[in-house]
Structure formats: C-alpha cells, structure tokens
Image 1 (cartoon, one colour):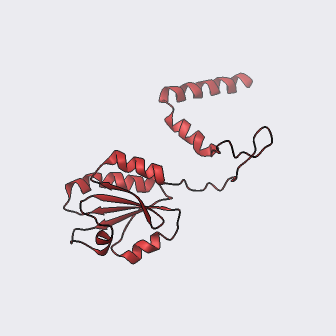
Image 2 (cartoon, rainbow, N blue to C red):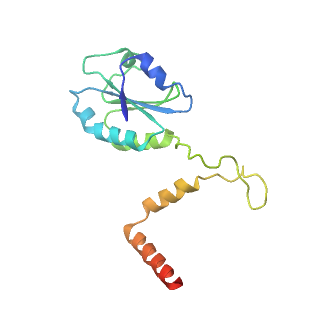
Image 3 (cartoon, one colour):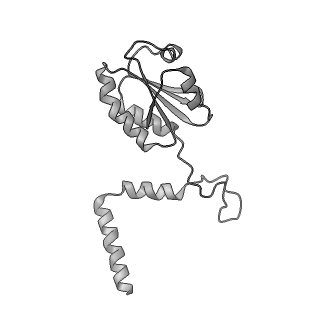
Amino acid sequence: MVAEISTKAQLEELTNDASKLTVIDFTASWCPPCQAIKPIFEGLANENDSVNFVKVDLSEGTNELATEYSVTAMPTFIFLVGKEEVHRIRGANPSALKSTVAQYAKPASSGGFSGQGRTLSGKGGSSAPTHNVSNSLTTVWSNTSPQAKVLIALCAAYVFFWLI
C-alpha cells in the first residue's frame, strides 16, 4: 500500500526502524511521466510488504520534504534505509525502480529458523551462505517454465499411480 504524506513528521514516523527500506515518490498529478510510472510503483508496494512506499504529491507546489531532499525533477524516487538516503532515481525508469527496490528490500521474516546453522562436518556454517529454503523453492518454482511444470506434474502423477 502506498501512503500519502506531506510533512517531515509523517516521514519520521515511517523511518523509525533503522533497517527498513522506505521509498519516497515525489510526484504531481499534472506530470505525465509520474502518471506513467504510478502503476508500477503501486504494484511494487503491493508485492513488498516489508517496505514503506510513500507518495509526496507536489501538485500544489513545493513542500518541506521536497526542499529537504533537494528534489528538482519529477518523478524523483528517494530510497531511505532508516533515515539515511541510500539511492536516488530521477525520472520514470521502471527497470531501475524495480531493481533498486529488490537490491535494498529485506524479505519479511518467515518466523522459521534463524542463525548460522551447521554444515555436514558439524562446524558452524559461517563460511557457507545461509538460505531461506522456502523462498528459494518458491523462486525456483515461479521461474520454472510452464512446460517443465506440466512435465513435473505428469511424472508425479505417474509415480503416485504406480505406487497404488
């Protein structure tokens, strides 16, 4: 969901978590590029629950946030982690917007196991990267071609009926 704000106090409420990403869209209703990228921004907001998506409408002129962040073009997307600016995009660039959100967004906690884990040798897993298996399998399945999904389903059905 995209929150519409207009004051610095409203932004400070959203940026209290020092590790959470906030994406600010400085936009205006009379700006054609702003309107063109609006559905993409809203789609990213719906897909990323762990990220604050904020819109600052400058249709009425400047406001304190635009002045503070030295916004000189619209649309301008400012990426904050906590209260610190980590990236800025000027203009309607959908691929840059998507990749930057993916780069800085932290996935929502699954409530599963956390920590380093153990390797097969019994030593701590600090040398090997840890992976969220649930997200990895979901990603692999969603990136699998439809033909491969049909083949997997047919093989599973064959094995199921063969065992009966």
